[in-house]
Image: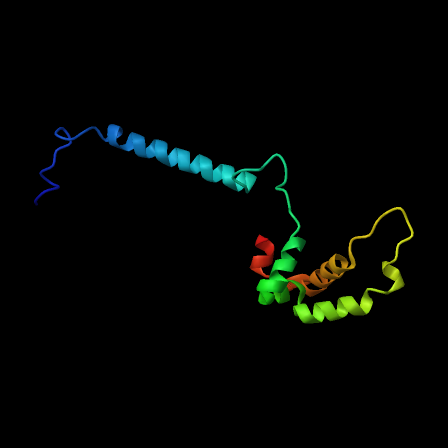
Length: 129
């Protein structure tokens, strides 16, 4: 036989020396895997990430990216303006309390967004935003 049969363990580095780094690495990997399984997250922040409303972007989308406006509200900017004109004088938007209401355009945008994204109709882009 050639090669392997002529190889003597006396001429080589001790098998303990070459296996030790591998064993330490494997133990570390196992410990990390167990931690991830246990916690199911790698890092849990102390506070939830801040969420900024995207309503200010609707004006930009209406003027420059109507396809994104349509994606958010499920209507074209022209239809949105028509609905807004139609409902603006309705008494439900006239508040006599000390609590001010949001502008009617924002209330309509919130409603259309929620109505258009119920259940599984939400997209990955919406989740990211």
